[in-house]
Image 1 (cartoon, one colour):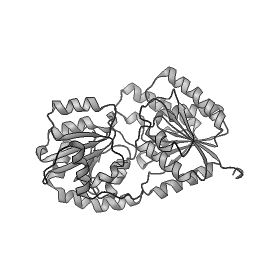
Image 2 (tube, rainbow, N blue to C red; image 1 turned 45 degrees about the vertical axis):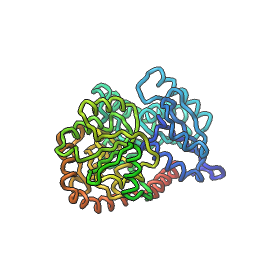
Image 3 (cartoon, rainbow, N blue to C red; image 1 turned 180 degrees about the vertical axis):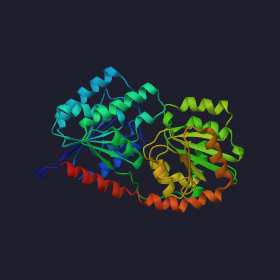
Image 4 (spheres, helix red, strand yellow; image 1 turned 90 degrees about the vertical axis):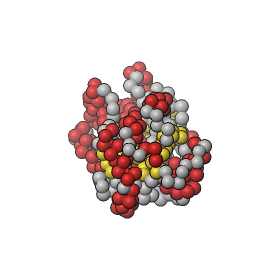
Length: 382
């Protein structure tokens, strides 16, 4: 153990600041551990909406990485490694905690010349499970395997991701499973939550309408395109309304699909702060992802006792067991998703019966537990 005359320096690195699961994860750790560590955060500058930087502006020093981008850009990627090397030499962190694929790969390679720090990497889902070309899948898998030799510990969020991590990692790299956790939140009552969303769209919804809701950024990985086609095939879609809370680069494309399919009851309402508080508005929560790690939104819906429809990707099966804690269908399968949506509409009592067990599962994923396990890991590395 190092001398405790000073607080250990902890540097978080993440590819982008646009609010999502990885950003919530970092924010939760920083706000909980700030008294124990001298914390810095470095964020890629590629995104216009740096929500994480705004939230942390008065809490910890923020370093902007001008060349760290989500896309593969060889020149910028090389420059990002040098940017990170310079930052490491300046801050002299005891622990470097990398988050997201690009930060994980480039940040660990950059640490090779900085032997002082221990390197931790949280895999928020494996990127080679995304809907990308076969060549990119092979490339990312090789890069994850290669860069693991510079990592002391890889944190995985689920048993599914742990198995993959053990196949990829070098012998000296430890795989530590620490699932994400949530704290209880005060939710709006059903009527109040529905009023907020009705004001958002400027329309009063009939009382007997069935409400579906999704909270997820508009990325390809979230499967919104499949969702829209599944809605179009529903038997009673005209008796339902579909709220999609979130923003992102796929919005224009998705709005085009919506128009082509004549889906009048689908609403993209953009980002809403504290969207979790609106969960009671929905009769069923839907997350149709093509790739995930372990999504906060599903845990939040489970804790709120809102029925869930989702897909068999990443760590989701560790939360949702089909027809026990919700409905879990195969990803990118329009037919299966339509069937699940129809089932939720026609057999809402069955869906509600799953929520009691789902809530008990969600209680095993506490924020306090996630933070304490991470704190113990950090102290073990020092």
